[in-house]
Image (tube, rainbow, N blue to C red; front, side, top):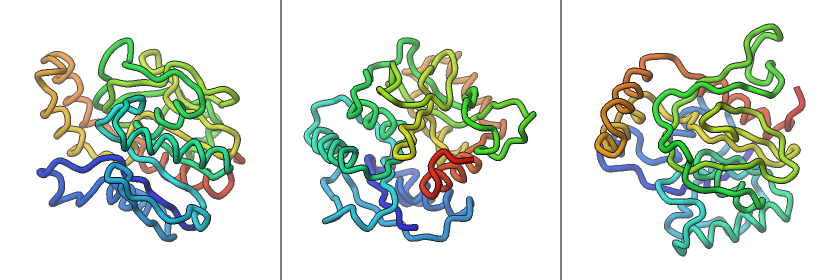
Length: 240
């Protein structure tokens, strides 16, 4: 396999020494999930793209502190690229901002979340086949991941299948056939990264939400299982 990561943010300086860059968090996670293929990274935020996407089995769009619906020139340029990739039937993966931007390009509404920030460890109902997440058929189809977002996809893109949901984030993950898989929370985050972002936004979040979210980070999350699913999706789509 050969993946392209379009990186849509720069890490804050305190995180650079340990994590290097946003794409490196995905590289680390995918390696833990058993991925042995090649990964090329381009900083869309800084206007970098491959000359051609033809060599890639899939293109992954990372998170970002930017709004996917903004008029920032680099975001507008990224939406134009993604629209072409969709039209040309390239396989796409989107996380957080990437999830929202792809949905926007597919015609779904994306705005500020009605209930505000969703942060810390979040639990979701998994609506896909349990075995796609490594769950036994009788196991409760639940998934927990680390989240950090104030924007949301407000309605499922036309023709898409809902794969994960919760009351405060109804469109938490979706697929469009075997071409697109997108997820709102961050499988690549570690508790350390989440804690850094919570500390950074403590004043904005307020003490009750901050304390609740910091406390949630001691519980396990399913980032590794979701990474295995993403790799499998690139290879086989939604086939179990």
